[in-house]
Image (cartoon, rainbow, N blue to C red; front, side, top):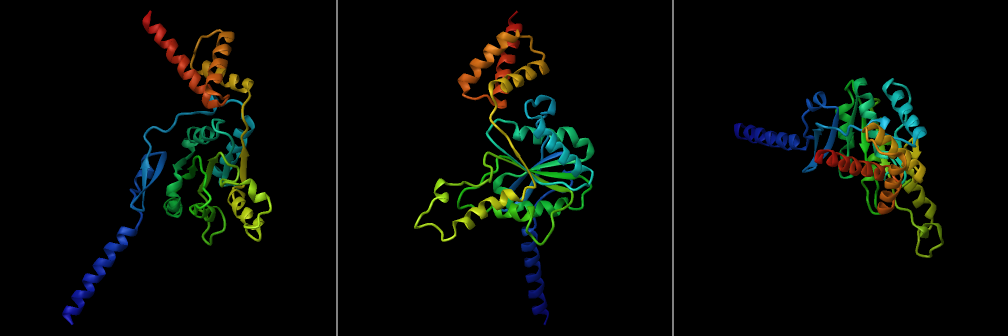
Amino acid sequence: MDELLKQITLLNNSLSRIADSLVPSFDASVLDRFKAFKCWSRNDQLELKGIDAPDPVTFAEIVGIDELINDLRENTEQFLEDLPCNNALLYGPRGTGKSSIVKALLNAYADRDLRMIEMPRDTLFHVFDIADIVRNRREKFIIFCDDLTFEEDEKSYRHIKTVLEGGLETRPSNMLIYATSNRRHLMPEKVAENQRDPMAELHPEEAMEEKISLSDRFGLRLGFQYFDFDIYFDIVRNYAKIRGLRVAIEDLRQQAMQWSISQGSFSGRTARQFIDSLEGRLRKKRWKR
């Protein structure tokens, strides 16, 4: 009998160690010390890393998308005030401010207990773990999924699809998901899917429904458009003003045009890169004097 009890005890200890190894690994105190976090997965275990220096971008730096900013801010303020609100999908061309306005939210509302957790695509299977971690916290958490797209054969989208809507367990009231993507429906759509193909599915509309059902779960969907030169130059002038760059307006316009031609884009990112280059050159000239 003693030997049997000894074996049972050893087995119980072994099972406890195995169970402990399966529990997501994270330091809960990190939530008290930082305002922004990044999700990592190490050996399929969750780790949350505090971000020491979050992107300092503010809404004052973002020009040309005022209506989109207002819509996202209004939704976020409803979230902070415990009012009905929606998960948000921001989609459109690269460099049009999608990621910037999400990151600017943290700098605008951190003093109202807004927090942000960045979740790369390969960590999405931890989204339920994150939900459990933040559920009983006083802070409000935005789960930030930047540049979110899924390929044809990927299944990881189902994790985020379920936590958005459709699962038995409800999403915590203090957690929202904000995602950015170059794709409106997050998944690739092919021209052939709209044509008759003898080798295609018998009911192709069902496959299409599956693809768009993910984006449908985002109650707030904000579409971004390509910028023209006028908006691009407005962004350039705004950056120049914020940074205190003294350049004649026509000279600034000419240089901004040449830069955009060389980059092949009128995006906000192109405008910021031009200003970075211009500011560097102007400072270098002053140092040489």
